[in-house]
Image (tube, rainbow, N blue to C red):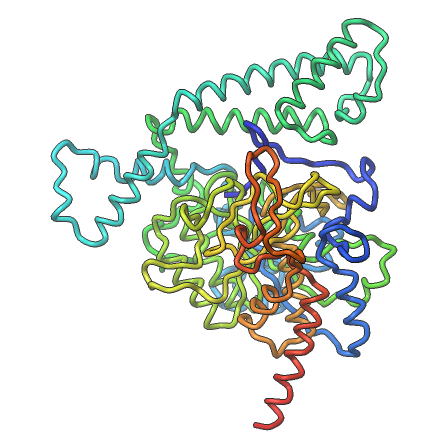
Length: 552
C-alpha cells in the first residue's frame, strides 16, 4: 500500500504549499554535506562532475509503479514516456502488446469502461476471509496438508492474529476521534477571527486574537496538534482531512474480522484473479482518482530543481512510464507481477516501487516477475516502508528474498529514509523500516519537496516512498551517462559510494524512541546515498569496462 508517515498515533500527509517555505528547505535533500553541512545527496556536485566528462546522455525509461501520476503537471508532462508504436485515442492495440492505447503506460486498477479502483481492503483482511471457511475448523488435521496448503495455512494464521482489533487499538481510535472533533471546533472559532480557513500552526503562532474565546481556542489548538505530533506547517484543512481518513481506515479495520471485504475488483476490473495468464485487463488512465503520492514520486525521479540551477541542461533524458498498481489500501500481487513485466517489456531500465505490505499470498508471481526483470537487466528500487519494523525479523513485500526460489534477487535495491539535524534534529527518522540483511542504503525521506497534482503545484511529503525515487534519479543518471553499466553494476555503485560518518560506530538518536542506532544497523551499506560519489565511481568503472571491451 502507499506507505504514509506515522507520527504519534496517526498518519498525516504533510502537504505544504510552495509559498509557505523557502528555497533552502525545499531542496535540502539535494545539498552536499561538505559544502552545506546538510546530509543531502550532493546532486549539484554530481552534475559538476558530469560537466567535465564531455559525454552525452542516452535516454532512460523509469517506470513508476504507484497509485497514479497527474499527467497535467508541467514538471511531469514533458518527461512522460511516449509509446510511439501506439496511435493515441484510436481504440486499437496498434503495437499488439495486449494493452490498447497505452500511450504513457498502463493502469492495472481500471476497468474497460474507464472506471477505477480507488480504495481497496488490507491484504490481511482479504487473506483471512478467503481461507476462513477452509481453516477455521475445530478438528483441523494439518498433517495431511500439501506444501501449498501449509503455506496458505501459515499466512492465514498470521492474518487471523493481526486482524484482531485490540482494546488498545480501540482506545487509540476513540482518542483520535475526540481530538479530531476538538480540532474542528477550535478551528471554526479561530477562522471567524483569523479569516483564514487554511491556516497552519506557524500562522496561528503569530496571530494575536482580540477576544478571549479566540485566544483560548488558539492555545488549545496549538496544544492539541503538538500532542498529536502534527507538523507546524500543515494546513488546517489537511489536518482534518488526514485525521478523518485515518479514522475511516481504523474503523474498517475494527470491523475487518466480522465483515468480509467487498470484492471491488470483480465489480470494476472483472478479471479472473486466480489466473495470471488473464493479464490483458485495465485501461490507459495512469492518473486514476488519487494521484498525489505517485505524482510526488514522479517529480523526485525527474528531480525537480530550482529554476536558477545551471545544471538543468545536463539532466539525463529521463522518460517516466506510469504503471498504476497501488490503490488506497493494499496492492494486489497479480497487478504488481504484471506491472513489472509490462514495464520491462516496454523498455524500462529502472522500476521505482514506493509501496509494500505485510502479506503476499501470491508472492511467487511477484518473485518470478522480479527475476524476469533481472534477466532483462532492469534495476528495481523499492522503499523499505514506514512502520519502524526490523525487516531482518518481520518481512514486508515485495521482498528481494524468495522462499520459492530460495535466493535473493540481485537487481533489487531497498531504501530506508534518513533525515538531517537541519530538518528534525537528528540524522534518522522514527518511521523508517530498517535491517541490514534487507535494507541496502539510506536516502533523504523527511519533508521532501516535489510535484503534487495540479498544473504547477508542489509540496512536501515524507516517508521511504520519497527516499526511493531520489535513489531512482541517481540510478537513472548513471544508466543514462554510463549505459554500458549493468543493473548489478549500478546497484553496487550506489551502495559503495554512500556518505558515511568518519566514525562508523557513531550512534544517532531516533526521534520519539528511547534508542539510537548506527547507520550500519539500518542498512547494509552503512550510509546515505551520494550522487557525486556515485558518478565518480561510475566514471572509473566505465573506463575499466571500455578498456575490457576494446581488448576483446
